[in-house]
Length: 283
Image 1 (spheres, rainbow, N blue to C red):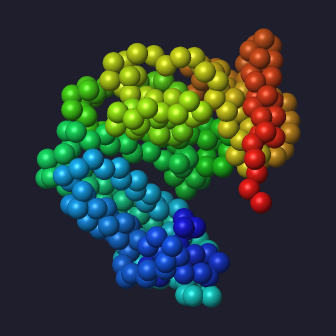
Image 2 (tube, rainbow, N blue to C red):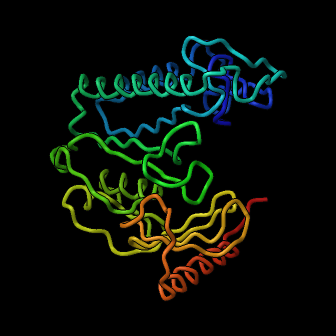
């Protein structure tokens, strides 16, 4: 549940056991990545003959940095070193991602073996860009920054609806995945969702309607519309707003001046933040 358990003992960074089945602790032996893959393969075998939705949140490359041949570093009530004991973190990072990639390969192979690959929409994405241990390519920022880079890919022709090798540069967010999956399943989406379905975009290449998207993470606020991105603060440190044209500067290295666009995006961002006050808060 915490997302940063020891990959072997499954103890979180506060020293609590954190390996569950439903709402009950369910300890298992094994490397976390391998166990998640094993459970996924079991699920696919049991559900191959009917419609299914498999949400599979792997842990890598979150700390603690442990490859498949390492040892547990945490014990119950003794969390140990939060990020692990490896000194060669770059190698550990690589080993962790490689094991995840192998697991995804096994899952795709199982879909093919069960005869459902061509009729399954497969989405692979990261919840955020890489942290400083990894690489976001030409994109700016890292995990936890408003300049961060996210990744999202889909694989599978999906019964011929999506052409193999097709690409799009459209702006999308993970909140778009839910309405996309609903449409793929033939289920009418409720009208109050923040996201939009990407299925027509992927299947027919039809552009999405223009929209402004927002995010605020660790105090880093930003708004984006088309190629324009406005960044107003980083990690709670207010400063001069910066406007970037991502079509010309994907790395966000050179702020540009466009008073009209900056004012418009700034007003939209403040209105979005103000809308939070209308959302009921959990006690």
